[in-house]
Image 1: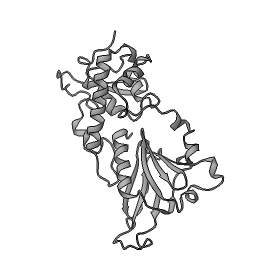
Image 2: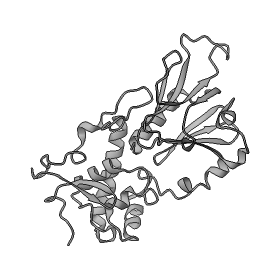
Image 3: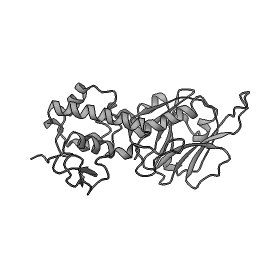
Image 4: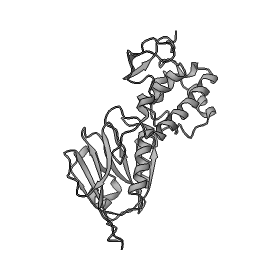
Amino acid sequence: MPELPEVETVVRGLRDTVQGKTIKRVDTDAPPASIEVGKSFGKKRFEQVLRNRTIERVDRRGKNILMRLSGEVTLWVHLKMTGHFYYVPRKKPLEKHDLAIFRFRSDRDQGECRLEEMVLKFNDYRRFGRLRLYDNEELMLQPGMAKLGPEPLEMTADEFVELCHRSSRMIKPALLDQSFVVGIGNIYADESLHAVKLHPRRVTSSVSRKKLVELHGVIQKMLKKAIRNMGTSVDSYAGVNGQPGGFQKYLKAYGREGEPCGFCDRPLIREKIGTRSAHYCPKCQREPR
């Protein structure tokens, strides 16, 4: 699943391509579970609500993409496992898993001339992605938004230490919990814990302040570096321009089970902790007693 750096890359791509454009029409071929329209719009369909609205701003909250539309409306998008936005020429043939096509008022309509008309496609071959429309007040009442934790790039070290010390839970599942801190998933949790030599089963309240300050710094540094490299492509992730990310070449733990640890050469292992897998070094990241 795309994590904070990948979603931030997509958001920046959307800002560069569709921010400021007015939606002329949206064509959908998505399962009912993929599209949701808030109660405030009554019986209006997804396509009806979007028509003639301008994309005024594109934001990110954790792993969520928020397209702020004219009329105090937000298109809330979660890419889930395989969702993608692609900005492509209108004449490009549709693909099997194109679930929504956003068509915009052409530059010609606005008194300009453009060589090629472009569209925004939402493609998702596993069809787990979500496109949801809410007015702004209703949006903030939704559990998936209201219960989100703090942004890791906006937290101070003191705030991170306090957050960890006021709970007693294994640190890897805590980092994955979007109500604890947003945007971090398996990749950056494994990488950060390996970098500071913390076992994924360590209980948050038992970790020293010094080590948590170190972890906070590593998380911020790693997320920023991943954003500069346009994210990590280990499966199907790509940006709005179709280009994959480049951070995968810096991975030291995630997906490297059986390979030597960069600190001690002992083989890294993969173990299920809670409901998710963790990659770590059994020597450098000693299991708590």
